[in-house]
Image 1 (spheres, rainbow, N blue to C red):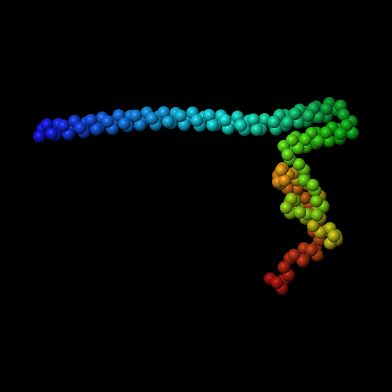
Image 2: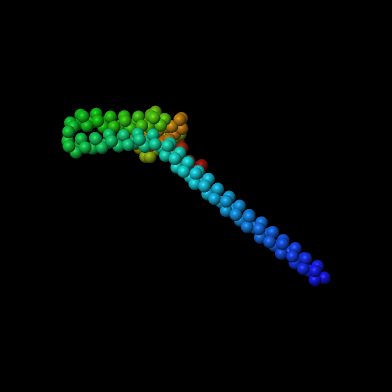
Amino acid sequence: MSNDVSEKLSAIHSAIDQMRDNIGERSESDRTQQKAFDALYEELRQYKEDFIFQSEKALLLDLLLFYDSLNWFRESLVKQQMSPEVIVDSFQYLMDEFLEVLYRRDVMPMESSEKFDRRSQKAIKVIPAETAEQDQTVAQVLKRGFMRSERILRSEEVFIYRHNNAAKKTEPSSSES
């Protein structure tokens, strides 16, 4: 019987040693796999950073050129080298140059509408209209709207006229309440 027990204990020790070896191999495999994943994640992070840099690079270079123009304009103002007419022309040049940067990114100013259009305009202030014909017309454009690829990037911000009679028509009367 002792031989039987000894053989069973030996088999158990052998099984435990085999399990220990398997766990060690598995642990080593997990460490190797973790190192591979870490290397892949680092490579992906670097690829992402490079992709973002490359996609933004052209815009950033355009903005740096525009910065140079703004700096030249500021220096000219400080040195008082320009007449008022030249200042106006130079400022218009800066505006045109900036619009060119936007055009290169497919960003275009929206066409203004004389009649208020809530799909493309945002009313900031309502001004009382003197006539019904003025109702819902644009009194003043505060910020120009811009589009990119047929999609509104920024709505135009406007002041609109509102006629009192038109406002009364849209308000519920006391008998309807």
